[in-house]
Image (tube, helix red, strand yellow):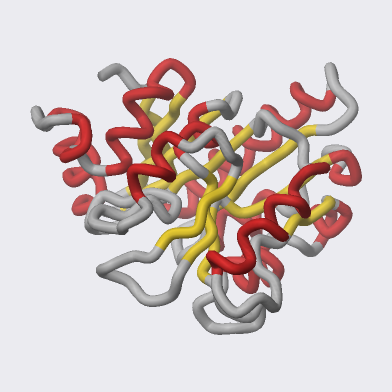
Length: 232
């Protein structure tokens, strides 16, 4: 598989250059359409990049912003991807973006899924720019190996799915694989030698499609528009 790699010696340079790349792609999208859309991932890795991106000069009022996935927890919970995004990205200039939350007060992700789907009916799709992370088990978004809903989420025509990881806490709401693959630009944002080695293994392994790491299954379908941003 041929992916475009962007490699940097330090995380700080990666954060700045990835933010520049995203901002430029958003500007390009806004030059030809009324609104542009951005889907971001949570976790610790993107926080520095968010702080670079949030003050970029672009028409944030015309940007739809959501998460690739989130844990079904209150948005002020320590494990909430929304909390991290609000604290690090949805401030400064980027506070003007139209944010679409992936959680509600329903009792579970499965119970809340329909309402979240309806909420995102006005979100601009296909998504213009989408940023993926990758877990140590090769999951991306909340497409987890062994999750009982994985195969449905890999093929569903819907924008979102609810998933139940076997190896991680909390039920989740996630973009489906088809929704991810439909994005105009797919970015993989990882740091550290271990994540680089895991991604290289995932991209070269020879197995049946359903036995591949979820990150590989997604990138197999999006290789022509995928970029990997990595720093040691």
